Amino acid sequence: REHGKKVIGVISLAEILNLVGKVFITIAIATGYVTLVNALSSVQPFFVLLFAVILSIFYPSIIKEELNKPIIVQKLVAIILMFIGAILTT
Image (cartoon, rainbow, N blue to C red):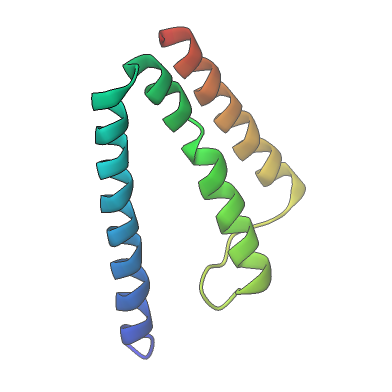
């Protein structure tokens, strides 16, 4: 409860960015190749991990992500497998 306004602000910003992202993906699909848009959007988990790591290092009060080597490697392997799966399905 002590971080109520901060949490609401962060969640609101995340939802606004999510909505903007969905609008851009819809525009990209309407004007381009669906397979290309789908392949490019499959790299999103990499950027989510990157931002989570950056926030954990510089702003640990906002997000606390475990940053030991085995966990980072596991997450990177999962992201690579997701990307390979997206390429194979397009």
